[in-house]
Image (cartoon, rainbow, N blue to C red; front, side, top):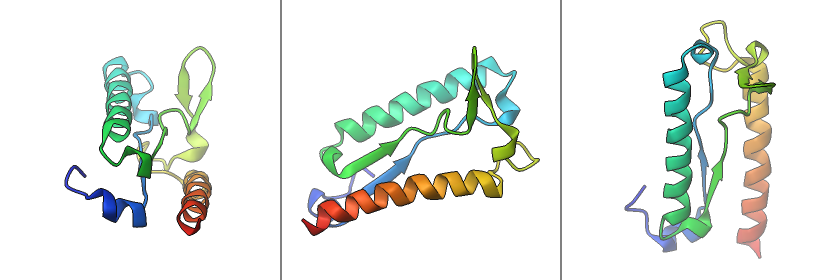
Length: 110
């Protein structure tokens, strides 16, 4: 990640997916807090990278959650193992990635 040249990045923008809260973390405050810190650190790294204008950071932390008093991972988006996404979860990710790819391709073409 750090060794990528900006010239290469201009030809190939990077879409960076941040971490997601997962069902197994629902009652694990320490893991939830650590993932929140990790997400912020990844976003800062993308933004402060010399080629940061070519990097799209996608905030995924609560993307698969229902939001009430705390973000709770929605089981419909996860496989029963509580870690991997279900078909529905991967459809959401696919739609988000396609959106960012279309935007990146439009910028490259101009």
